[in-house]
Image 1 (spheres, rainbow, N blue to C red):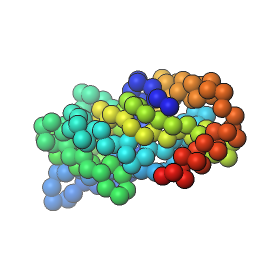
Image 2 (cartoon, helix red, strand yellow):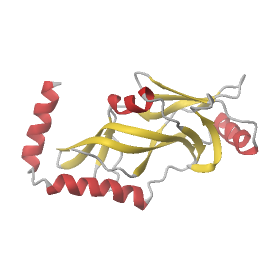
Image 3 (cartoon, one colour):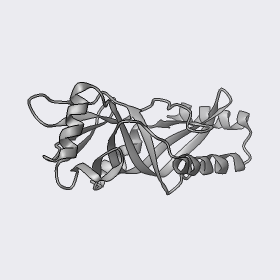
Length: 191
């Protein structure tokens, strides 16, 4: 099933850390194969292959503070943001600038006051199924435009609404919950 093309943002609990001996910030912006909290009538899982396009095409991803484009911490094209896929998820390493905003967020991360990350993406391909009577969206392919260190993870109504439109398209297919579950199990068995 095709996904939506609008930008969506998601929060992932992260083990952010700022190195004491350097100014780099490390963490995971995306955790693979873990079901999200309820995002407004559905849950979501980011599959391992979903980040491949961004890495393969070397997309120009920015690292921000709280999704604020005026507070840029790094950029892949500039070599100040490194993205790597590991067994846990999408690992990030940020070499922030010597700016007031960067110094402030470094201190907040070092102290443990800020521990979360978020990411912005456009869905290329997703798949919907039902587990325990609840819709589950699996993101299979996407383009990532931003990773962000966040104080409070926020799912704006617009982002939830966009994903909800995708849920409505799934429901409009007319698949019964039982048939959707059977199709999902068959797909999973095929690998």
